[in-house]
Amino acid sequence: STRRIQGKLPQRPKPPPQCHKDPLRRTEFSWLEWDAGSMDALELIRSLTARPAVRSFTDRSVPTEMLEQIADTARWTGSARNRQPWRFLAVRDKTRLEKISALGAAAQHIATAPCALILLSADNAFQDTQFDLGKVSKTAILAATTLGLGSCLGTIYPDDNVEQAAQLLQVGPGWLPHHAISIGYPGTPMTGIRAIASGRLPVAELLSLHRP
Image (cartoon, rainbow, N blue to C red; front, side, top):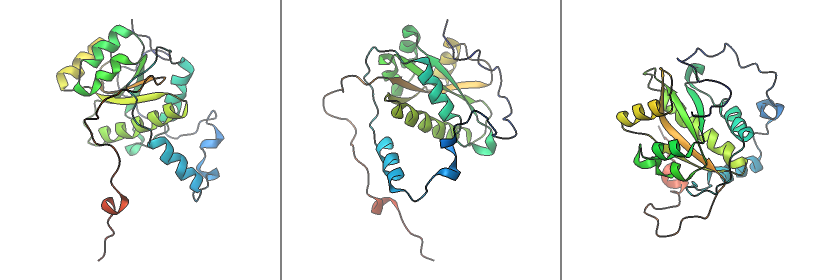
């Protein structure tokens, strides 16, 4: 059976807590202590976000403690009305990883990873749910990068494949496995010609200033 972190998955979405008070929350996460004008902080963000996706991994396993650290960091991501429409399911079983990788053209790299963090989204029909899942996935990827891990986001689609993944992973009702992040220690980078152009558009091409 699939190994799960800290107990069973919830059977249906639960309402979020009324507040974010958490006695275990680390003080360095406090915005009151953050220097908003620090260029070093901006450089750190640029450094982390500019890391390329990793699709090749070593066989070294990812410790459970690191997975918990990633989830602990990601859970503080903001969401619409604090719904927190996400749950995390860590999968290490190689057979299941290979089957998941076949459930979407953008999920093939999952077969090469020692672990995948399945991002379960609440089946609540809210338009902002998938936007929130994009936000929390970015936080999880940044946390993994900080821990020295490589990662790559994959998408499970179409709906028939999402249903297959839910059955394969024994996901309870009310949750949908639309996305998965392959996680592991980076291996030998892939060689060859890139099919997709690299680099980023300049700020002058992206940012316009409205002039009334």
